[in-house]
Image (cartoon, rainbow, N blue to C red):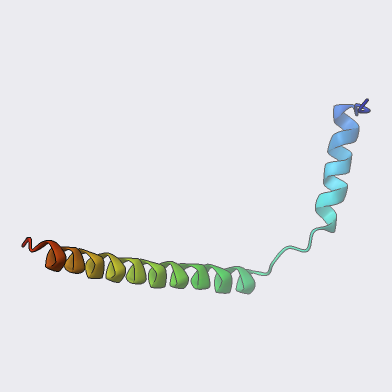
Length: 66
Protein backbone atom coordinates (compact mmCIF):
# COMPACT_ATOMS: atom_id res chain seq x y z
CA UNK A 1 0.00 0.00 0.00
CA UNK A 2 1.36 3.43 -0.96
CA UNK A 3 2.06 5.95 1.76
CA UNK A 4 0.29 9.25 1.22
CA UNK A 5 2.02 12.56 1.85
CA UNK A 6 0.26 15.73 2.87
CA UNK A 7 0.35 18.57 0.31
CA UNK A 8 2.68 20.79 2.39
CA UNK A 9 5.33 18.06 2.67
CA UNK A 10 4.93 17.28 -1.02
CA UNK A 11 5.56 20.90 -1.99
CA UNK A 12 8.64 21.01 0.24
CA UNK A 13 9.97 17.90 -1.50
CA UNK A 14 9.26 19.40 -4.90
CA UNK A 15 11.17 22.60 -4.01
CA UNK A 16 14.05 20.53 -2.67
CA UNK A 17 14.29 18.45 -5.85
CA UNK A 18 13.92 21.53 -8.09
CA UNK A 19 16.88 23.15 -6.32
CA UNK A 20 19.04 20.16 -7.34
CA UNK A 21 18.34 20.64 -11.05
CA UNK A 22 21.15 22.04 -13.18
CA UNK A 23 19.41 24.49 -15.47
CA UNK A 24 20.95 25.28 -18.87
CA UNK A 25 22.44 28.71 -19.44
CA UNK A 26 20.88 31.19 -21.83
CA UNK A 27 23.66 30.43 -24.35
CA UNK A 28 23.10 26.65 -24.14
CA UNK A 29 19.37 27.17 -24.60
CA UNK A 30 19.89 29.34 -27.68
CA UNK A 31 22.37 26.88 -29.23
CA UNK A 32 19.98 23.98 -28.65
CA UNK A 33 17.06 25.95 -30.10
CA UNK A 34 19.02 26.87 -33.24
CA UNK A 35 20.13 23.25 -33.68
CA UNK A 36 16.58 21.94 -33.36
CA UNK A 37 15.28 24.50 -35.86
CA UNK A 38 18.15 23.71 -38.23
CA UNK A 39 17.50 19.98 -38.14
CA UNK A 40 13.76 20.62 -38.61
CA UNK A 41 14.53 22.60 -41.78
CA UNK A 42 16.87 19.85 -43.02
CA UNK A 43 14.16 17.23 -42.37
CA UNK A 44 11.60 19.43 -44.14
CA UNK A 45 13.82 19.74 -47.22
CA UNK A 46 14.56 15.99 -47.23
CA UNK A 47 10.91 14.96 -47.00
CA UNK A 48 9.84 17.53 -49.60
CA UNK A 49 12.50 16.24 -52.02
CA UNK A 50 11.57 12.60 -51.31
CA UNK A 51 7.88 13.39 -51.90
CA UNK A 52 8.62 15.16 -55.18
CA UNK A 53 10.85 12.30 -56.34
CA UNK A 54 8.22 9.66 -55.52
CA UNK A 55 5.48 11.71 -57.18
CA UNK A 56 7.63 11.99 -60.32
CA UNK A 57 8.36 8.24 -60.28
CA UNK A 58 4.68 7.34 -59.89
CA UNK A 59 3.74 9.69 -62.74
CA UNK A 60 6.37 8.07 -64.97
CA UNK A 61 5.33 4.54 -64.05
CA UNK A 62 1.60 5.13 -64.46
CA UNK A 63 1.97 7.47 -67.44
CA UNK A 64 -0.17 10.18 -65.92
CA UNK A 65 0.67 13.85 -66.24
CA UNK A 66 -0.18 16.56 -63.77
